[in-house]
Length: 346
Image (cartoon, rainbow, N blue to C red; front, side):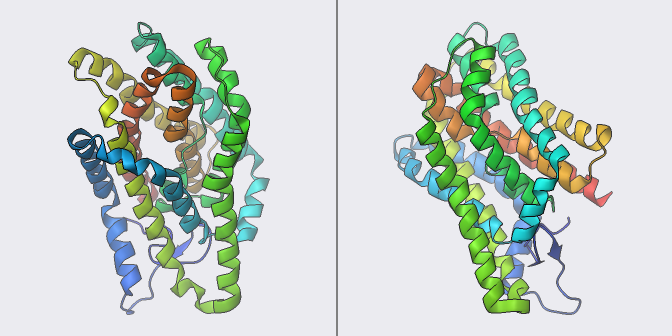
């Protein structure tokens, strides 16, 4: 398995340097290496434990809700510290890649959700509306973590996360109204505050921390940077556990209903990842690092945000298919992590 960014000695923007030959790894490097080798297994464990906790203690796990946004902010901050500001600025020159990421996010995913809702959820309009809405929301903040773990283009993933959040003010109600036939009311002030707390503030703090560390430590900076990506990865796993545990109480016990809820996300995420990867790698012949960033930025959705809008706009029932999708999005991301690792080695 290749080393994820920062899980050895880290330079900038997802470009890790291997430990020097003959040099004994530091404690940080050993922890990072353990996470790197076992990350997908740890993800599956968090999925299982989150489901179990949600079933066993549905009321107690609700106390995790206030931690969700702070955890996302910590996750983004820790990954951002490993990025050189000048590289983040340079990524804005990649207009083709950014445009493609936005098109996949706001056209491909909503259409896939629409057709799957039509095929499986048309008898349950509230579920169909929630599932379609899920396809319109911005990409998940964890796109940065997965991109980083695959040595992908982390600055590109960050830019796509920021742009999809900003554009979501227009795209969420617009696309949902078009495809679901219902206008979704979005509080622009609340959404902008989410952008600030979840992405903009951690990103700025991460860049400032990087610059301060460069000024203080100089050439010895790579010795300390490996501490940050493991924090981001661990925080991501805590988020997976929390989101699944919190939403398990909403899953009904009727098997026929469960099948209706489960089939759409089982089909959605592999197709979304597969089509995005095909377009990036075969049609546009993009490098693997950029491909990974775009695939994870378009194939993973900000499900906590989707659930909040669904609750406010359509009721609790509309949020149910989104909660069920959380487990499959996480598992799919982990499976494709393994697939893309093999492609990187080949």
